[in-house]
Amino acid sequence: MQEDKSRITLFIDDEPQPIAKLTVPVQFDLDTRKLTDGEHTLKLVSKSPTGREGIKTIKFIVRNGPSVSVEGIKENGIVDGVIPLMLNAYDKGNQKQFIIGGSETPQSVPSWMLILLVTFIGWAAYYLLTNFSQ
Image (tube, rainbow, N blue to C red):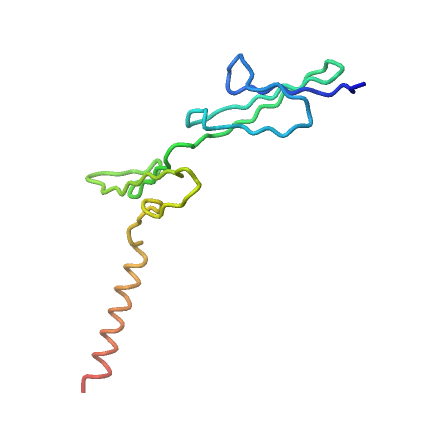
């Protein structure tokens, strides 16, 4: 005789049709490639052998499309004039081979690095002028 087990029904967003009806315990692979990029909600409705129900919702964000990187402007930044932007978009590809080209986002030199370089050059010039000019 098979013992009664709890069942879980999975829904994505507000879809009336479930994506799966499972007897627990079970391991389930959620394929996010079938979902659009953006916010989604996974709703799990459990039902015990006695007929009692429990509901759990989990919000998540899908990002299967190419990742977009922007340098030169920040979220909610205050800007004026012409703003130079560095843009890049790269995809994970088929994940069976790694492609180096385009997989990294180039970045400009940080301003603190430029200040450090100018300070070092100034100190070196001062040192050379004061110790070797006699």
